[in-house]
Length: 558
Image (cartoon, rainbow, N blue to C red; front, side):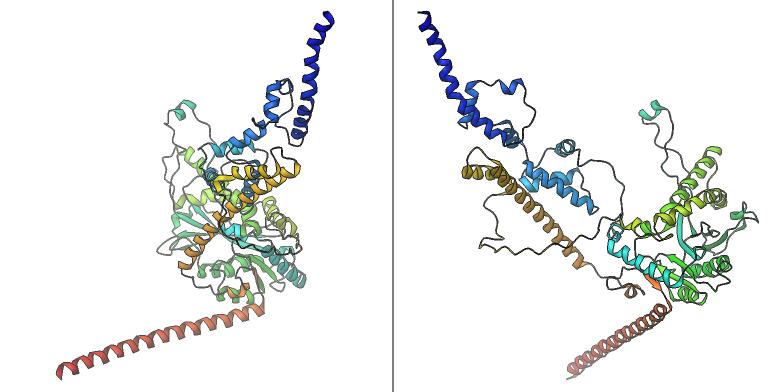
């Protein structure tokens, strides 16, 4: 009896283990081909036999499949969305949270929750992040072109080799504007309770928005030229009260214009009275060529300015449009500290006077002078020339920072023959990406192997690519429609000299100045011819009008 009882008890155990072994091994084999969601623990190893049977029959899903089914996007779609965000970032168009939600809607056809984008960033924080960014001009981003900057350095190297410029004969000039009574954003110390109650709205500032322009020039030998300040004055005169703090030993020039901005006349006067006088002696009384690097502002790009430069052996090189933030030493390392130091001087002035004294033109020079002396130090000037790679010449310092680097050419791929349904809408809509899973699983079975999983990911990736491209094409069509309505502006005088696209650097050699002369004469003739045609058309219309009136009078008499 004991032996039979033992057999009755032990036999079922032996039968169960024999029956469940292939099922368990089959499940383990199938799950081993998929990446686990987490490390196995006791709760996953000690499964009930009923759970294993239902799993083997396909009645329940794995954790991976369940999470994928509940997710808004599949893993492959999320991966493609991350790549798309990276592409937009490289273009200088990083999306905001609402943009990312729109991308997800374009992919799956359902609007995500308001916090979905935040969770998406948190789940993928190893590759993306969310932070506040300041605005950056699109024109500057477009100008960050590898080929454009490389062309500029090619011209510079060619002319440098030809004329052998000494560092004390290489200069950069530009303008910097000041809003006289405005402070920069500064970290401050204040009472916490007052701030939390909303009683502290900000730091007090004068608020005077009078615009004063500085014309500044630095040299590659770490020196700078005396500053030239342009005050706004409708009368065109500088008042004595504005210069009460000016000392005879100070090296500074003062002038005025109705707006406080520079113009052609002031730029020409600066060239002859400031630049030529301050640099002629270092250039062996003008016998050595001087290189003047500047932007394409209209006050510099006119025939009077260029002819005066040619007469005094001053070679002019204009940067490509919208590239001074990359190529100009004044913008890179001098103007930003100057704005900071001036803001500090203005803040100190407000603190000393307890905000009781208004800021005006008479107070400006007193605050500007120490700020200029601090900002235009040898260290800052040298740093600017080195960072832009222009002295000593090192183009890679700038080219390596650009996102539009040239890529190696790829071998051409054979065109895939298009089916008769190519270009038509798919029978599976954007919101039915889960149908793709069912179709693939019906084709390869419930248990997906490595190849099946790769096929499924490829389907999701192509589906996502199609959705994002459709949205991009829609936006590009709208951009084309808007641009067609916009009137084309007239080209500036020297745009044709900058190359086919009108955005390359330009070196005003004697031949280039001669070409500019011919171009200016041609434009003058074209304007005269257009004006003559307009007057002729006006006379013809008037003549036809008089003829019709005469015919009407004759008909009335008859």
